[in-house]
Image (tube, rainbow, N blue to C red; front, top):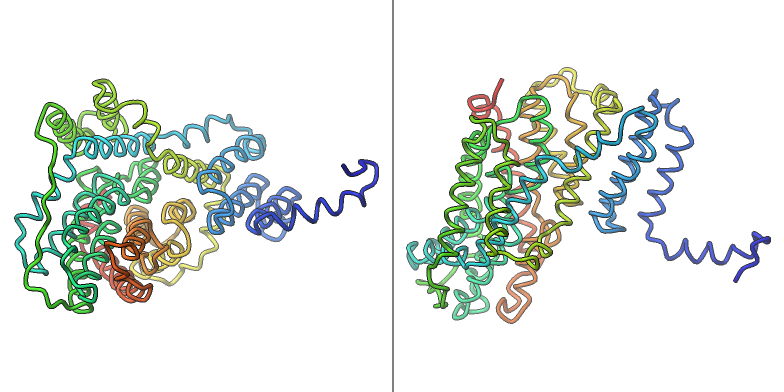
Length: 473
């Protein structure tokens, strides 16, 4: 053990720890030191709370981008820093950040995860997927379209990762007799991944960025209802699915004339399936119309939690298996947004973004491009967490379309196998025995980039022409 009285004796230990520490952690610690010492207040003309908040934002951004620690650990660190470092400078009670961390949005996603677990537990997800595919026809184009539409439909109500996993399982049976070098193999795997990414935009529970941005609109009484959100997103989703179908069909032509779906024994319809289907329909109705009777989406989301666990359809094991890391990530982002808003940092940063002289459509395009680029290098949830508060004080554009465009754009980044979980799953499946090495990285880069770029153009056009018809003014 080094001699505590001799600092030189500790140097090898310090150097060894520094060498083994991920660079992201070191940069995050440097950001903490800079903000804590007050070196930013003078040059940037920041108040002390804003300076501390900027330090927390820098720490979160560095750790989320580098993934030096798990993403949810960064979220917990954000909350801890706010409670111990920022709250005293604001003279605010810690409940300000705790309420943001566990908000209505967290309950909304918890309900969505439980619905997904119920569908999977009873086999209703597989039954629905097979019923749609069997009615689609057997030609490759019809099968590809039906598979993508089914994946997108499932992704609207369950996590895109779960939807992708389910549909890849069905794809395995369809690809059994498809030659290894046939283009349909690549088109089907990419179609499932892209449709899982895009399907989440259609509902507030479909993708974490949706819920995160919706929270900021709710705080300002500008939030669209569940039904209005779907009206905004469904035209965009339909156009994007048609675009993906066209791109994949032309880039990966097939020589097949028919595609068959293998047989699988499914559980018979019983009381468990009836319960899940009834609760699903009641929950959807509550999300669509609950606002008229004063029920928030988070309150409605408690219905499947109570119904499934109260009837023992789901047990403690399924509760433990829920993706709590995603809930913690969302909570950390909302707590970060509350800090940026309350400290005045949002107003300061927004006032320095040069939007003067730009039209509303140009500002929307810039926000969408920034969201797409940021989501390409980090998780779309973390990207939404960072972008949302900075958009609040942006001049020259209405807040509601700006935040909705930002949320949608976060889901359009899919150029690489590591860009999204569905991309990684499809690529990994292709390297396994069932995929026969169908995909290489460049197969995903070209169509994924085209979908992102063309999707941004379509998104901005809809934001200009269609969003004003639906969004509250």
